[in-house]
Length: 205
Picture 1 (tube, rainbow, N blue to C red):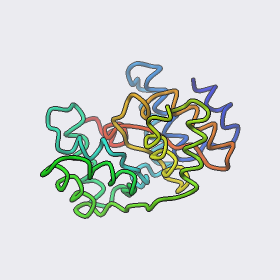
Picture 2 (picture 1 turned 90 degrees about the vertical axis):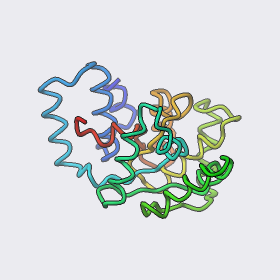
Picture 3 (picture 1 turned 180 degrees about the vertical axis):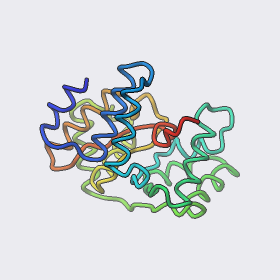
């Protein structure tokens, strides 16, 4: 997987690229050994991981309030870290439109997180729609789930480091990471990492 990723990019790894390599190493190794742990610490120093610019996809807002989900506690910690300035948090009109489809009081509660933690909201972007169409055309994400493609596209055109998502069906999966990386490269954008809250925090808790 790692050799394929490097060959796919055929250029120096970006900060998000380094993060993807670390994620692949962890998945390939099953558990973090001493050598990998040291490598990860070195990468932290090199890429300044605490300053990552994160795109918060719709499911992240849901996980903040869904206490029965495994990622709930990590998601709450991530929002707090964003509010404390450890990460830069972003979302988009595409996400807030989805949030508005929820019933009250959860709808208002989720939307309140944007102001509470100073999350920046991107507006509708024609270029994001074009890039999302390429993801769909190339079979990365089904046309029925266009909004999922648009989340990745909006993060890509703004040069963000990572999409935080718990959508494991279409967004947070290996195929999507690799193919969107290839399409982004072909269109002048760097690849964007796709992870969960825990993988970004990565502090052993």
